[in-house]
Every structure is written in C-alpha cells, then in structure tokens.
Image: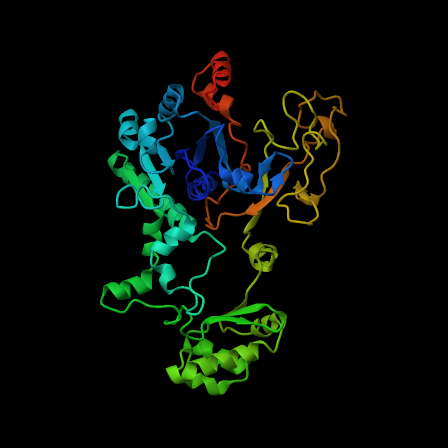
Length: 468
C-alpha cells in the first residue's frame, strides 16, 4: 500500500536531530527523501553509540536515516551545485539546517533555487530564525528553551529549572513545525502552482508552546513563577516517591479523579480541599500524601490504581516503556530492515556473490538496538534469534547472489533492527519502514546514474573529491 506522501520528493541537507527527525517522519509517510551531506565532515550523530556491526552505522543514525537514500557531495564544488540543480527537476522540496546565510554562500539559497524550479518549497530550520537579533548566534535545545520563557516557570523554587531527557525545542518545535510548514506549503502549491520559503525558528516554536500561561499573561494576567500554578507544582498535581525509590505521577485534577484518589489512599477527608488546597493547608496536605505514597512500592501502587480511573500512573524507565504492554499494544516498536553497505538488504544475496545467508564477514551482527550487557539478538522473518549461519555458496546449485542460493531455494531471512515507530496511525495509508539509515554516500552511483551521468564521470567525481 502506498504511503500518504508518496508523491513528495525531498532534498534533505540537514544534520543532527531537528531536520533529520522531520524528514524521517516524511519518509515514514511515503515521501522520497534524498539526504545530501558531506562525505568528509560527518554528522556528529553518527558517532553516538551503539554501532550496528552489520552495517557500521550507529543506532541513532540508523533511526534518523530511516527510509532515506544518501548522496555525499562537496557543496563547495561547482559540480555539486550542478547536481543539486539537476535533482531539483524532481526533488522540489528542500530542507536545510545550516546557520543563516550558509546556503546563500554556497549558492543554494531559496532565491537562486526558485529560479531553477519556481515550484520549489524551501524550509530552513535554525535556532533563532532567519531574521532578528540572534539569527547568527549558536545554540542548543536548552538555550532555546531558556529564551522561550518556559524554563522561567518550570522546575522547583528551591533548585531552579531542570534539564529534560528529551529534546523539546529540537523535535516538538523544530521537527514538527518543519513538517507542518512543508505540508501546508504543499497544499498551497497544489492550489496556486507556486512554492514558497518557510522559516522555522526553534525558539519561536517553544515560545508558542507557552499556550496557556502565555495567553493569560498577554491578556493582562500575571506571569507564573515556579510551583505557582496547577500544572507546575503549585497543586497536588506532581510526582511522588514510592517506598522502593520509584515514582508515581498523580494527575488527579478534575473533582471526580481527585475524589477517587483520596478514597483509594484512605483520605476522604481531603476531598473538600480539592487538588489545590488553600494556601495555609497546601504544604501540609502535600507532605501527608507524600508520606502515604512512601508506604508502598511502585508496583503495589500500580496494582491498586490499575483498577480505578484517577489519572495516577507509574513513572517508567525508558526500557520499561519500550518493552511494555502499551508500546506493544500501540505497535510503537517496529522491526526495520537493515541495508548492506551497498544499500541492499543485509541477509539477502547480492549481485557479486557471497550467498544469501548471514555470514561472519558480511551479515552477522551483535544486536538490534544494543544495551550495555544486553544479550545480542536480531529478528529474521518473524522469529527472534542470534545471528549465525555462514554463507558462501549455492547449496542448491543456484548462482551466488541469488536470494535463494544459500538456503535451498528459500530466500534468506532479512535482518532487522528494532526502532521506534512513527506515532501517526493511518487507516488507509499506514507508515512504512523500507530500510534503516545507511552510511553517507551509499547511493551515490544510483542517484547519479539516474541523472544521466556515466560510470566514467562518476569515477572521476570520486577521484577528484566531489564526494568528500
């Protein structure tokens, strides 16, 4: 079944997290994404462990690069610019994440590319936007959060703001707004025939997430401080430590849920005060609830609250969440096929020999998503097992390279890596995961041949540094 975005073709010049996450989402939904990066200046994400031995690609790169082909180009070489111009005939959506002005220096800015293809949709992601006083300033996720105002009322009064384990500005702001902007521009182009430029500032996006507090302040209300409103520690809506060092999230805001909470913990006398007791009682009530929660383990409380609706849930570790029943029930972990260094399937026979079975030299690998000290497993044709079986010949007499050569006429299993799924569930055009991310430049020859370049030209490009 075709993906919802199968008609879209995207040239992706992004690195790190925001842009690659955005284009991964587009690829999951069917877009043809071609990633264009430097062969000599690797994306820093490529160095993040663990590495998948079957492909040599890091697990994070294998995730963010999912479903994308990879072209290595030196964009300072005029021949690289010419290749980009040729690609624009089909790939009429461009996304980049350089500092403002870099694409202009390279000759790949929107004004020049729209002369090549007036229908081009061009999205730039940056920390502070393409205009404004901070456009040239460096930053990271926490800096964008800090300047958005959100961290001014997040955290504790005693200790100040706290770091998050996930990148809110990068993904919730940068990635998601890029996807929204691109798809809106596609709809507009369908009606007008014209492309447009999209300026995504990650700080703008986080500032917009101040939805309730920001709306109230701008209408004349007070700017909130830490632990001063219902949702940031100024009520009983909070995290509570359990007897065994775990935590519960108690989000019993509405009266019916708070009533259930109080009844379950044996304190019906607290019901009249509500989730936000009057100032003189608040600290006393919160400490009493903390003391009650510390009398049982997380598992004991989980079993108790599983039987009622009170908006009380355990705080899970990442491993517990990804291996748990909710992730399984929602199919949030998927097995994604690995690709060999030439872009073909790991575990399947390739033209050029080697057989189809997983072998020690080209197909065996230590793990899907590896963890320290965790047993190595892969998934093959629906069954989980360890990598094994040496390839090398056609047991049934088939030629080396035939998918069935090493398995008596049965195609060798396809090796996969476990990854997070796309969270959008479509009824007719579900997300699909063609292959995990590959090494930079894996598809150089394939892409250039499709553009009409000869083998001799491609060899010359390689020899003269175009792919560096």
